[in-house]
Length: 186
Image (cartoon, rainbow, N blue to C red; front, side):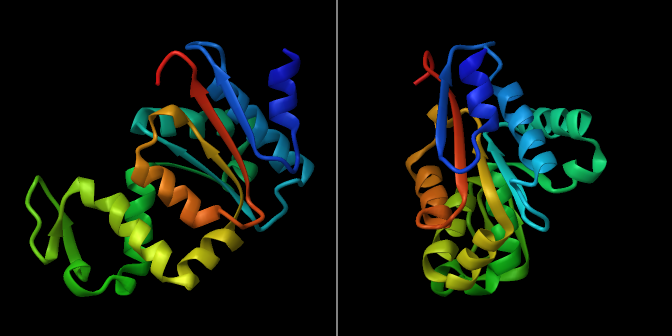
């Protein structure tokens, strides 16, 4: 399909792929990753970041890229859920959190109860990662230097905090964003 081919092979422009369910949006992302890695448009050592909403979707996209591109290229493709990626940011830059958001090294994620410094909830992950990105230029810089391309799967489901997280991480950078979403799920 010409529009899918164009979306998969676009080099330096942000794009949105809006299509109905079962139309191949995830496959377009897998083909795009393969194209960017094989052609050098995502030049080594830069990586591609894919963010999905569900663990199964993140795994599915990672597996598709691995099958299509092989292990060498797929090793430069990171596929996470928003929450998993936010946790990674917190783990790497936990010391940037201050005041009531300060976390000990062995903090836990558990249930609906927050215990200052010791335990956060699942819903705290994205806001805390957002705080890190907004307050710590080193964290922002590290993301921008690591990822040349960012994929957002099922983008129509993004919450305000998730959208702001992506904006804080990559707005004004050279990262090329590709978002896919379902026009019938809004």
